[in-house]
Image (cartoon, rainbow, N blue to C red):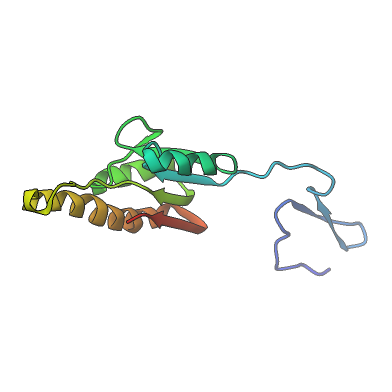
Length: 148
């Protein structure tokens, strides 16, 4: 009798016949299995641009909105621990989209050094840390998208 070292594909049952041969039955043939929607996190999904992006993706994907307030998942991208906590709560994702980041806007002569650090902590390091931490929570072939 030949024993295959290869496992049958998912949804296929392998059985041995009386004559020593092996049969395979595909459980998905003729059945209507619901395909699971891909799960994406949109950070900043309640903002001006984020609402449009969220609206676009909701018809095809399971969408979670992340943000500091009024969101499915609380996340502050300026704090690494907040990023880690959010991903631990959510689990695996197929995509992470970041349309968030805080910056101070004013005339150049009115901006202080601290005003620039707000953007550096949020827009720059927040998005760097989002990728650094978030990549561990992506499913195979997952993606991270970030705005400038």
